[in-house]
Length: 100
Image: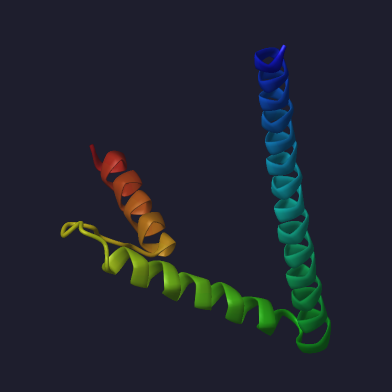
C-alpha cells in the first residue's frame, strides 16, 4: 500500500510540476505580448506627433544595426548591395539581352 501511495504521490507531483511550467510559460507570453503592445503604442504615438520621419529614423537605425551585425559575423566574403544597385544590374542585363 505504501509503495502504491508513493507512486500516486509521484504522479501528482509530476502533474503539478507540468501545470506550473505551463502556467509560467503562459505568464511569460502575456508579459511579452504586453511589452510588444506597449512598444507599438509608443511608436504610434511618435508617428502621430512627429510624422513619418520618426518611422524612417527607426527603419534607418535598424538597418545600421543589421549591417553592423553582418559585419561582425564570421563570413569574410559577404557583399551587401543596396536594392537600387540590384535594379541597376537587372536593367543592364536587359539591355545586354536586347543587343544579342
